[in-house]
Image (cartoon, rainbow, N blue to C red; front, side):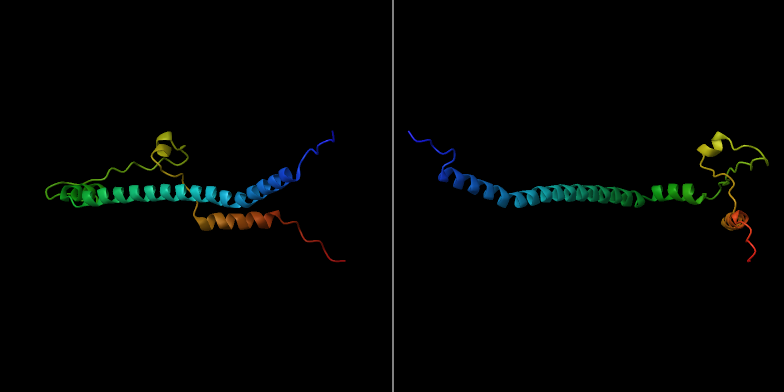
Length: 138
């Protein structure tokens, strides 16, 4: 009995056809998966925009209420109704040399900062002081 070849010509052709199908379908499959991801991202973006529109509509509806407008004017612009005495409480400035308290930091009060031009000039002075003295030419 003669030895049978391991792969027949039919099996070889079948393997080549299957490999070519995999190679042909790989790119469209990758594109399909990428497009599905883009579609999901766009849907999430649209949902976020829809939520923003709903929030803005609710805010617009609040501004249609005269009582809300009055409350906002009183709070933001410090308006007062006739007969009321408005006042604004201002905390005194800290003593010179005093450390800023944690209450100042929590209230969002910034530390005393030099003006921008003073900082700029200080950096120019520091750069000038850092330069070595020029050597005399020979």
